[in-house]
Image 1 (cartoon, rainbow, N blue to C red):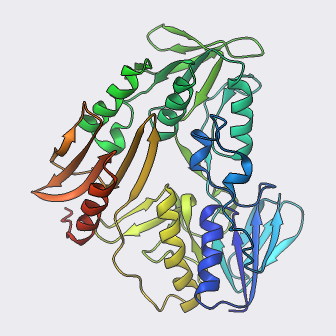
Image 2: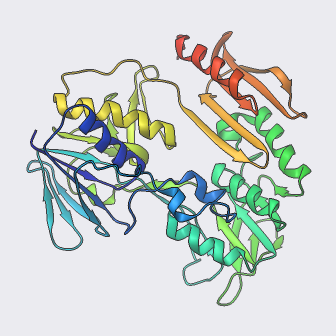
Amino acid sequence: MKTVGIVGASLAGLQTARELRRQGHDGRLMLVGDEQHRPYDRPPLSKDFLAGKTGEADLALEAEGEDLGIEWRLGTTATGLDVAARRVELSDGTTLQADGLVIATGATARSLPGVAGLDGIHTLRTLDDARALRDDLSKARRLVVIGGGFIGAEVAATMRSLGLDVTLVTSGPVPLAEVLGRQMAEAIAARHEERGIRIIRGASVTGLTGTGRADGVLLADGRHLPADVVVIGIGVIPNTGWLRESGIELGDGVICDEGGATSAAGIVAVGDCAAWLDPASGRHHRAGHWTGARQQAAVAAVTLLSGGEVRPGPQRPTYFWSDQYDMRIQFSGRTQRMDSVSVEDGDVTGDGFLAVYRRDDRPVAVLGVNRLRLFSRRRRLLETEPVQVG
């Protein structure tokens, strides 16, 4: 394989380039990115960067002096793919053609209908999004966050720590319930409420008010929440629109086997746009987290360079972390189909705790709050436990 093209200048794209070099690819390596920026770290955007504690230079993912011999084509969007020729059509009218392709186009933040042209409304996905949000929040007093996922919780925590009046609106029973399960999500929500965040649960947003600039959020029950800035954190959409006419199999992302191979020979997909097969459950999942992107990159590089002949080993359980106030929240595994959860160290009302989720008395997930060493030990044990799925 003399040439490899990577579409997406994300963590997943850059890490796959590193893995290709590490695994012996010494040919041409081309990388296309729709942003003008070189690859950068996204997790700090909702935390230290938003708070002004981290500068843009600190976000760089490339190590000082690192040279992978990449031909960079930044500020250019992929618009189409000819799978037979492995040729990518680009928005500047040029093409990228290679012996092997890596799809790493990530995802776009969801928004709400009817908000176009209204100032003071933000999603947070890119560095440019974070710049605009930080500038707007510097002049704000009241913030409403729509969405009970990690982005919403992190933005709410960051801005509450800086003294803003913060309201967090979630359609679910409690923020983070979908990932952590309701019982443990309630424990995290209590920390937010203790610090003065108003959480509105089970709410449906029907619209935003304001002329020219948003000044509030309307709920289905008639309530109006005043706001100087509104952040929408209701999930993401995988960036696969450019692949619709290609014939490559799509679902909630690019459909891949457990090694990252797509339905087209010589093409793999990684990161937020890729839905990999989980052999244990027989279902496809998008990783959606920093660690998952790194793990996928190593496997996909093997798949691409071997032509799919080298099969991957067992997948490691999902892992992610989140910093909120003085809490380092770490989670590994999946809570779906668990039947019990118990706190095995600390106290949910104290300075930290560790909880283990089980199904039929077998651990299927572990949650740690300020329990770094204990969590690491339990995470390693979790990786050795066979999980029964039915």
